Length: 559
Ligand code: ADP
Ligand code: MG
Figure 1 (cartoon, protein in one colour):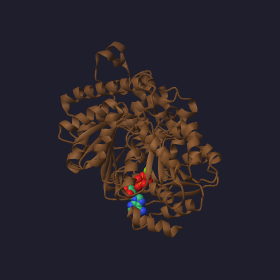
Figure 2 (cartoon, rainbow, N blue to C red; figure 1 turned 135 degrees about the vertical axis):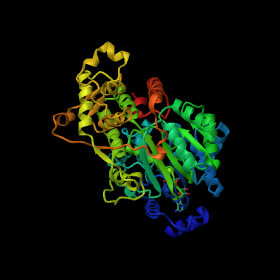
Figure 3 (cartoon, helix red, strand yellow; figure 1 turned 60 degrees about the vertical axis):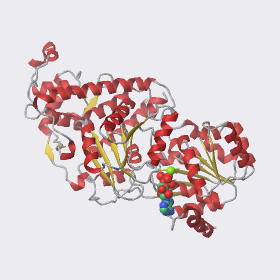
Figure 4 (cartoon, protein in one colour; figure 1 turned 90 degrees about the horizontal axis):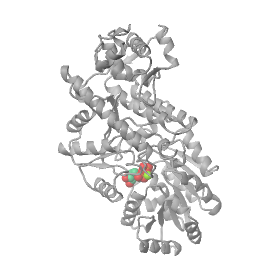
């Protein structure tokens, strides 16, 4: 049967050869075995079930959470002459009935359906009347409660085992940390499944992470210098930031569209369609955009805000360069990102166990940002591939990061936090270190503090960098309600002088945007603070809203 598969690969799909491990997966499915497939985004997972659906008798059922993309996938298959259909609530009744009739009559090679629809008793009865070749459970990480795409209905897909004995199941995902992998196997009851895991390296992607210093200006320069006519995605944390940034880029001559779960389904569909079909276009989006997007020539993925985990970062950046040509994963982040994410996490209603996992994930993400050695090495090590050499193609390899002895500065910073009673946010603490009097500090009598003005050797931005790194490394915590900085246990040794601390020196490189200078800096800073404040308020409002929106992380939605 594998010869038949080879033939279909060439004649129907027009590919010369399989990409490993596609051939092995196809073989396993043709033999009727369950499988778990972990391959990076763009690796070619779809073929693993599309091809066996054609070779085996009966209809291949593809279970996918991505209703918005189903029609596109069906269209693409139809163009290849494959008889495919989809069943979802966005379709007119006549079309649904026609597809159902074809399914039962054995006239479909493949059918796409969302899990909640498949699990309805009526659908299950319908599918039991049809002849099925396989179940493909795409984006299988949605079964993981710890992941950022958790879908409760995925948990029930284990029932397929009993309801459809003899129909092999294949689960596929690009998210593969050990915990998620095990969760998929357990929850879907894939105990005897063959496992196929392909390496995670995406050598054509260049990873770059810089200090945020007026992020939008930095983005503009990056785009103008390196991607003036290219296709790309810009990720932002909030819907408002998405809208503002898309409008801002459009004003500057870029073909930029917003995408987030707050837009009407029609508009989302329209923007998605434009993104998939136009040649020079930028999608500015929340995390609601991307899962399953297959546009091969995305030349850059830019993050204006910090993702919540390394998994999210890897998935999002993985949408760049699917064609194998060079592509950029570009990100800027700052202390404020860390504060927001920590506050969202701590302020959510999630249980403590869940929060602890989220904290660890955020810490790993921060670790990747602050690392001074090869980013790719660190990224791959995180996904269980510890043996890679430095890549020579990420920012830290290309431009080694200068470090400085930040022991003394860190001690001053921690002391100032302590002297102010651990009740104030970063901007105020920096006022104290610089000895910059504001009416607030006069009222509070902090000008009498022993830490008043002890930090004049660094400027405001340098202090921000110090605080960012202290938070990132866990010496300081961010209190949830007001963003006050507080000491954590681990800073004791440092305060006692028993530990030294090397910090990254954040350089303002060309791509880091214009310097904030002299008199202006305070005003720009105030503007930044105001933006941050607005963002924070928006996030709080967002959290209150219970919705089916994917751009809110699970600890926001489900509790
Ligand atoms: P994934 O679901 O793993 O993210 P896709 O299945 O969408 O990836 O495939 C990504 C791209 O790779 C698609 O453009 C697809 O046409 C292409 N592709 C898949 N398999 C092969 C192959 N064997 N040879 C050439 N191109 C392939
Ligand atoms: Mg896919």
